[in-house]
Image 1 (spheres, rainbow, N blue to C red):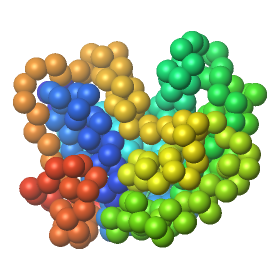
Image 2 (image 1 turned 90 degrees about the horizontal axis):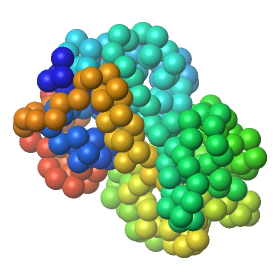
Image 3 (image 1 turned 180 degrees about the horizontal axis):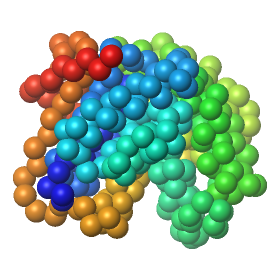
Length: 282
Ligand code: DGL
């Protein structure tokens, strides 16, 4: 069982930012990545559609023999996590809870005190948190409720940023246009005087430079990829599923567009991907 791979899925390529963090933290684990490039973007779709896509990917990955599933997509984590957990036999982990936990960790790092707590436990101790994400993630209220569950005194302000995904895929990470779009999106968050900003979408970590320049240096930027890798490690250890020796073998699947996948993968991963296998699931 320990030698089985971990499944990782996203609506497209952005989830490779989470794949990268998993591969760095768990260097002996084999990973199978599925990018639903036939249905991307999830961020403008309904809960029903995103849930149906997510479950069919989860079932496909279960058939590949995975021992756990990481939902790298924020939108799928916000809309489909409960249904996925019910539909699959393997443990399933999303990115939202780790993202919220990372708020506490970051706060502690910059203030040198405090603890990270389980839901309902000690407060995360930030005052005003901004969340930027896709339209569907913001509308679901998933981040907002997870944050308030940790600390009911938190002020949470959300903003949907639908133009960011195409801008990142275009490679315009520090383009003047992206900076202007970002300044517009974060205006209400700045007005709310946020001290922390959650990058609630797979693509946004690539815009850290631009976001830093528009929100200012005093705002903590939270990228949940690393915290998700930590949470995956904890899960594997607690379920006695961790693989601690051996060389991993990674596989990549997409539901459409192999050329685009291979071309863009390097942008998200930092290294190239040799092969992508195409599986249409509908
Ligand atoms: N992967 C999605 C997310 O993290 C962004 C792209 C999309 O809209 O599908 O929310």
